[in-house]
Amino acid sequence: MLNIKDLHKSYDMGESSLHVLKGINLKVEKGEMVAIMGSSGSGKSTLLNIIGILDELDEGQYFLDGIEIKDLTEKKSANYRNKFLGFVFQSFNLINFKNALENVALPLYYQGLNRKDRLDKALFHLEKVGLANWASHMPNELSGGQKQRVAIARALAAEPKLLLADEPTGALDSNTSKEIMKFLQQLNDEGKTILIVTHEHDISLMCKRIVKLKDGIITEDKKIKQHKIK
Ligand code: ADP
Ligand code: MG
Image 1 (cartoon, rainbow, N blue to C red):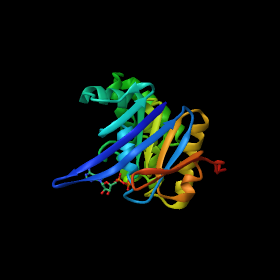
Image 2: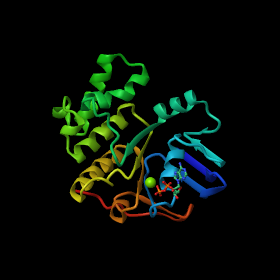
Image 3: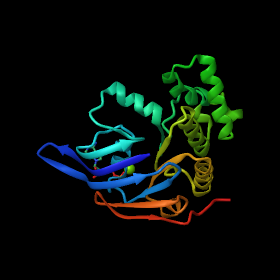
Image 4: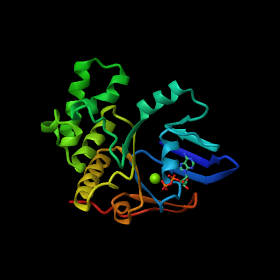
């Protein structure tokens, strides 16, 4: 599904540069649920952004579903993103002036579906996250957990092969975090490959594998017995 070889990434800081990722090797197979752990500033988001084709690597190689992600035009990278990847962020990133259903329907626009098919499909995915009754509500009428479920429905609407989540529970209380993680576990049980960036130990234990990042290198990579939420 995903194969990263000796990846390096630096940020240009004018006079100097900041070497953030220093030779990352990472393979993820279909059906895995991986936590990328590390303290703030360790390079987790940088790595996830490269995996998500939102940013480019400097050195090394990145293969996504067998395709090398390299020197892509804006159009091609947008294509791959829409085809392969779904994103969930800490801050939900919903569009405030669109209701829940329209938010979920948005990525389907890029798949060339007509309006009715988009809204039907969006409703199907809202149902999956248990929010069909909230379809016409605006984001500011939803709780944090509900917003994140809308964001997950939106990420899933285009049926991505890989779901990328950057601190998906970072803005939620612990009960709501569990609820969201339970849903992600169910999705993974259905076969979805999921990568979750987190700095919370208990969240990482709810995944099946933990990759620890420290100062831009992977210091640990182990499969674990998943803590299943009932
Ligand atoms: P994490 O997600 O683990 O907290 P990040 O990947 O966001 O870490 O950041 C790693 C390091 O890179 C930090 O020191 C951060 O300040 C720096 N950094 C992140 N993005 C940029 C950027 N666009 N330009 C310059 N420095 C950046
Ligand atoms: Mg981060």
